[in-house]
Every structure is written in C-alpha cells, then in structure tokens.
Image (tube, rainbow, N blue to C red; front, side, top):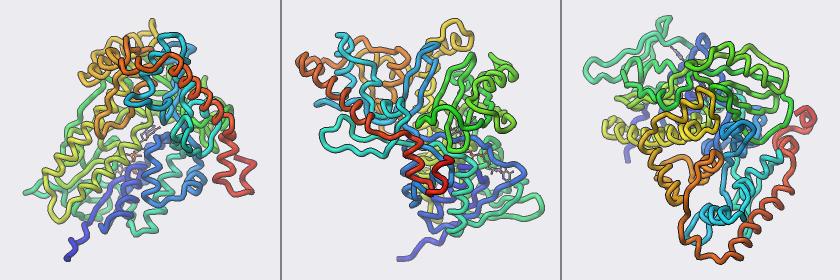
Length: 504
Ligand code: FAD
C-alpha cells in the first residue's frame, strides 16, 4: 500500500491552543509540524481551569498525571461552586459526575423531585459524591465497586497556563515539532484557490505549508483576517466583555474546585494552584467602569497580590467557519465564550479531536470542512446556551446588570430546554452536546428553575422504598466522603518528590 506523502502543517501561535495542537499532531500523525510564535506578542496568560475531558487528552499523549501536576504546579478539580448567582448568600455547585443513581428507566432526579415534593429529600448536594468531597476540601482518586452510591468521582485540573504551554512545548520538541520564533507580518494566499500558500515573517523568512492552523488568539490573523471567516457575535446573550486577572499568594482553603462568585456586574473566579491562587473578574463594561471592577477584585483576594493586574477585552462569539480552505482556527482564534464553565480548553481539545478524525490527505475536500463546521457550531451553541442559563436564571433582583440578564431574550434552543424541564423534569442530551443532564440539573436546581412535575414512572416506587433509596444514597455519599484525605495531603503524596512535600 502506498502512503500518502506527509503533509506539512504550519501552526501559527504558541499559546495553549498552539502547543496542544502541535502535541496531538506530533503524537498521532506523520505530518511535518512547524509552529511559529512571537515572544513579542506573548500569550494571553489565563486559562487555568479545566473539565474532566482534559484527562483523555493527556492520556492520549501518554502524559503521566503525577508529572503533569508537578510540572504545571496543578491541583485537582471536582467541580465549580457558584456563589451568589441564585441570590446573595446562597451557593450551589456544578460538581462533575453523577447525582445519585439511575433507578430502572429513569435518572435519579425524577425520584428526587418526587421525594422533594413530599418534603423527604435534601438538596441535590447530598447525593453527589463530588460535591460532598469538594465541600470537605477532600480528594482522592476513588473508583467505585458494585453497590456503591456513586459510579466514580471524576476530576479535572487547575494548572498554571504558562507552565502547561512550556510543558507541551518540551513534549513537542522531543517529538520533532520545529519551532520558529518570529512575528508573522503577511499571510500570502494563492490567487486561484484562495488557500494560504505561505506566511511571511517580519525579517524576511517565508514559511510554506499544505495546511495552516491559526492559533493566534483573539487576533485570528489567518482565519479571521486573511481568510475572512465571519464572526458570529453573541454579546446580546452573553454581555460580559472584559476581564481583569491577578494572581495572589496561596492562602485560605486549598479547594479542589473552582469558585465563581457573582459580583455587581459580572463574577469573580478563584483558581487554587500549588504556588498561587489565580483570580479574575469578568464584567460587563456597559454596567461597570474598569476602576470599580479592579477595586472589587482586589478587595476579594485571599492573599497578597503577586503581579500587576492583566486587563483583557473580549467579544463573545465564534467564527462561522472555523475551517475554511486550508486553514483551521483553534483556540481563541476560533472564538471565545467566557470561562464560567471552564470550556475553552475543552473546545481546543475537541477541535483537535475532530480535525484528527477528518484529517485531509493530499486533497482538502470542502465537504469535510463543512462537516467540521457543522459539528463545531452545534457544540459551541449548546455550551453558549448553558452559560446563558446561569445569567438568565439569576436571583439577584434590584441590580441593573442582573435585572437586564433576567430579562434578556433567549435562543430558541435554550427556551426549549427550559420548557421541557419545567414541564416534566426531562433533560435531553443530544449527541456531541458537552454538558450532561446532571450538569444542567445542578444549575437548574441551584438557581431555582424547578419543574412542576416529574416522570410519572417515578410514582411507581412505593413510598418506603423511595425513602430507603434516598437515605441509602445520602448515607453512602457521606460515608465515602468522610474517608477521603485532604486535597493538599493527597496532592503532595501523589505528585511531589519527598523533599518538596512540606512546602506545597
Ligand atoms: P493565546 O494564548 O493568545 O496565544 C496566541 C499565540 O499567537 C501567542 O503565542 C502569540 O505569540 C501568537 N501570535 C499572535 N499573533 C502573532 C503573529 N503576528 N506572529 C506570530 N505569532 C503570533 N479557558 C479555560 O479552559 N479555562 C479557564 O479557566 C479560562 N479562563 C479564561 C479567562 C479569561 C479572562 C480569558 C480571556 C480566557 C480564558 N480561557 C479559559 C480561555 C483560554 O485562556 C484560551 O482558550 C487558551 O489560553 C488558548 O489561548 P490561545 O492559545 O488560543 O491564544
């Protein structure tokens, strides 16, 4: 059998997107990969909270988890706490993993709704092992055995974005990825096909290739500027457009979860790492001045501020075509949604996976690009809807920004999802939709979007069996959570060499 000749792939950009893409191409393809990045521009420097799918990416690359956590000064993440979203003083968690256990045909929550209506159920938190562990600041890699109240306890990571990119760079360079330091000045397109023929670096060098991957961040130099892929602006649904990020000294609880605290016109993140806490304030410039946003952020740091604040402007939305001709945008070059549910790095990963599945040979078929774009659009829009739900269902009455968000018109797809849940407790997850019914359920319940009813099949369970089921799961979750070690201790033992364990 003849092999197709190795494709020459040029990646422009060496942030998280560029190096993740290079690593996957180096690991799984025979392509010759060149990555161009510019120290003069640098990377965005944020993007430190993930969701459990990142473990599949790392495992695919053959990365050792303990080494990865050590090198990126990372920590474990069991979910996200949303404080103040349902109203000041209230908090709930979107914890990864199952809530209770399905019973027969139905997901657990139909039984929970029935028990709750009878005043015989606790908040959802009582039936989530991830949340029980997270609330105790406990962590362990825990796997279920038959009869346990949770099938497993999925985890993700927090990590230092700069160290992650550096780690992947070492991985790539050891596997033959060529790195060129230089500023791309011009993107040269073929007069006939419109494809990108080469990129010209300031200083004279020209880099040619068969396929170009745009990882240039918000600038979208190749896909947006050169190829003209239109930007779908979603600001009317997700109006935040600024963020200020600032690290502080590690202090306070070493939480195995990300915290998102609602503020007057946006929200603040807290991401605990081994050596610092990452903080940021995402806000809407139409409702808050920059100085006020900064003051709020600095007033809510656990420890001493460690660097100058980094202010970022963004527009929420995506490129209508993420793949056009011989150019694919990955990362911020393809679009952006605020980090409320830590989805951007996941979207990088899923674009890479999709691209590998559709990897072109000698000829790039526009039908393949169209299919890629169709899947991407679906995935992005469903994530967008999930984020909008957090804003739409807020309980912060009397604050102009939040009142505005509650009154916003919704996309039809989200309207339908809410209506279905309200009618029967039904939550449908379509193929390729990222968030699980458990994820939606926690946000619905945490922000008081409650159904009028549940699936009547749940009524078939006699009262005493329902009560026993609820109690068994609740007690099982408690029992397991009580055996888990503190996050900090587990992390030390798991990934640190003995001489560093004390200082972590
Ligand atoms: P960048 O990091 O901006 O990298 C761009 C690269 O392109 C750089 O290497 C630069 O040198 C290069 N470049 C640009 N122009 C040129 C040129 N002309 N010539 C040569 N090179 C060039 N995601 C999450 O998953 N979780 C989070 O918690 C999270 N938090 C976020 C918070 C904020 C406020 C923001 C804005 C984003 C957040 N993200 C998060 C998103 C995440 O930061 C990005 O998805 C991720 O860092 C990827 O960025 P990137 O590699 O696409 O772009």
